[in-house]
Picture 1: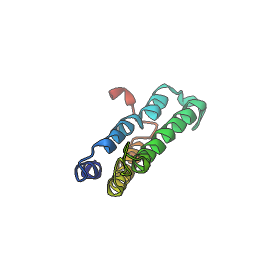
Picture 2 (picture 1 turned 180 degrees about the horizontal axis):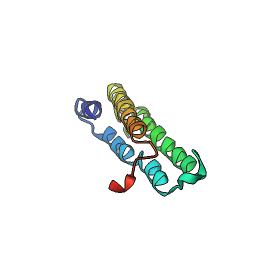
Picture 3 (picture 1 turned 90 degrees about the vertical axis):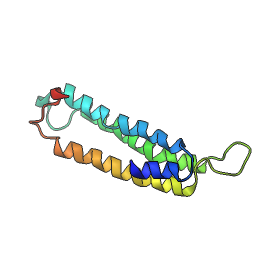
Picture 4 (picture 1 turned 120 degrees about the vertical axis):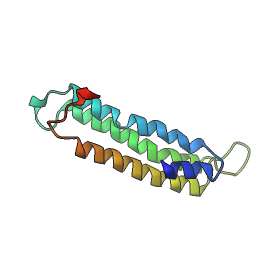
Length: 118
């Protein structure tokens, strides 16, 4: 999050902060599929595969948004919506945040974890 805020604040442009929406949405499909899938169907089932597919779409969108914002020109000028430095800060922040989310699921991904406490 620090890299994201630095990328936004140093350039006085808060458009890259919309990536936070993807940070909030990324773990939701997997949490829902683990909550409602039956454990008797084996390590993989259609519900889990769909949740992983949706999650990967969200993650790719989070990496794509700053690139698209950097490549998109401001209307009437040749200036980009966000500068190159902001794009790199946001991409670095994405790596850190999504690595943390993966670490959460590896740590709490066992069969004995009860999600009803959340």
